Amino acid sequence: MAKVLTNRCIAPSVFRMVVVAPDVARYRKAGQFVIVRPAAGRERIPLTIADADADAGTVTLVYQVVGRTTAQMALIEDGGEVADVAGPLGLATHVERVGTVACVGGGIGIAPIHPIAQAMRAAGNRVISILGARTKDLLILEPEMRAASDDVVIVTDDGSHGGRGFVTDALRTLAAGPDRPDLVVAIGPPIMMKMVSRLTKELGIRTLVSLNTIMVDGTGMCGGCRVTVGGQQRFVCVDGPEFDGHEVDFDEMMRRQRMYQAEEKASYEEFLGRHRCRLMEREARRG
Image (cartoon, rainbow, N blue to C red):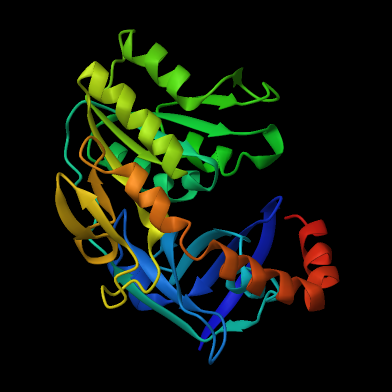
């Protein structure tokens, strides 16, 4: 069992959990993830490590309530426990000094881009972060990203915060100026990463994407995270989660993500039928 120090709602359906996991905190590197099981006998899910404190022995996990297991996690109160936090897993981000790095985070993808921005800046790069969300209320970790970056550009679909538009609009503008990035790292919804990769291929900018959203088992045993990269079959959890964005078959990846959509929806709705009020109460307590 691992103690949960805090588990707070930070945006609609988005929670930040700080859990005691000393070994993970000590050995984790940017880009890696953990497997979390909220309770004995429950599903195991992979979550990217958003931050860690080796001295305190804690890791920070940011997750969005999209199904039964994440909804179960959201109901855990401060001071509670999760059954397992196993890791760190996956290959770490390759960090080197390249010049200017654009860290592009969309929606919940801002959480896994955070430790990458920290590591890239610590390596001596100029880090410019582009953060996107549908609306101001859904933008997460802005103060943390400002602390990890040399500059931050914010865009929202509706213009309620920062500029109006998409992260690709901001990236195109950045690439046309004096801070043209030498490397782009993009994490977010698959369609966002696809559009960013299409743009950077056109502009001739090397691009890394993290395909963490497709992972299921996290150990390479289930095969659920199989993707095609450069014409070759890869498993995101053991060969990634980061890959060359110009070589990923995003259309295949998105089709695979929809394979069990009906079953996932049915399970989630059954859970909501019994716990909707508690979830609404938890969401109302922002902090």
